[in-house]
Length: 477
Image (cartoon, rainbow, N blue to C red; front, side):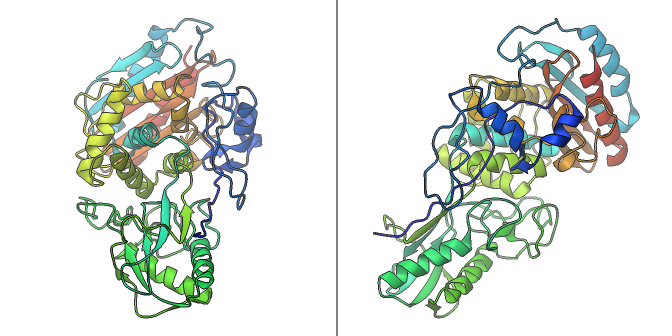
């Protein structure tokens, strides 16, 4: 029997609730894959259906099981029931219109604000106009991946015997959380160290101590290079890469990447095998793993729920492109930019979201050919808050919290009325700035909002203007 180790990952996807004050957020930590553990644990005690398993702990060997999950939002916000008070669109419009006129927002500004409990549109301006969304398109990428794969799905990286005598093959499955470190500071995921240890043990049990190593990164098709070209914000999109091809100890943000992440991953694996007492002759070379062969060893990614939360909290482009391709594979499309574009659009449409005029040219938002509307983004967020779709909740729980986490750590912080109450995805390209997420308003309702802009004169002024808009939604009567 082959030796297979299943690495259990702790990932939060069981709650879409928000803390109701900045003090609660500050005291509720620590964070786990973009979600407060206290928030997750409290919510898990309320309902006995749906959700995703948080794991039995590293090394337990237990497969994910259904776990308790929360209602759509915390008590008092009102998803699934009539709101405590009716919307006041006139008051919200009066607050937003002058803020939308800020020249820092460029020449085109669109907006949408929706009550997630009722679906009522509270404010909109150009809400159906397709715009370049920058990284806010990651909301759509995350939504589609959860719909296609489910929150508990884990991506396999395997080692099999090869076609040649004495050969083994490292087979990439597209795990963006794969690490060559003993314990990755980025969080739980596939682990080459453990995979090499298990492979060495299986080989020794079979009486083998010398091998040649091949590596198979053929799962993805089409160009591996993003259309923007070589860029420190994204590695080559390959099905086999450790630590996102980063050449330092960073876990997020722009940094120089490996020229060939798959080859570097295979080299790292070869060195790890040697440390485990297995001699690897020659340099690793690309090879196709034989079909139908049982693996010698397996390592699993973080669950999709955890990948989604990490993607949104850190605006991780590598995870975004990986999940877009996993969505394509689950939808019977080629694992390429083109296949992912078709698959993401189809998954959104299948859940009743109007994708007319949209384009999902990539999963990360680095491509200016991407087009979505403010209305589409709020529709996705409202659907993720729907208690009938608990599998989509990580779209909400992964969003950074204003003043506390991820890309919103320094925005709408301190005395802002949105601090701790707002969760949102940022978007930034040259001349393009956007913000989309959810906020608990003064009456306790969970509102979804999206603000998209074009031709902004600079990011700093645009971000401040967007933060004022989001704060106005939080403070509106």
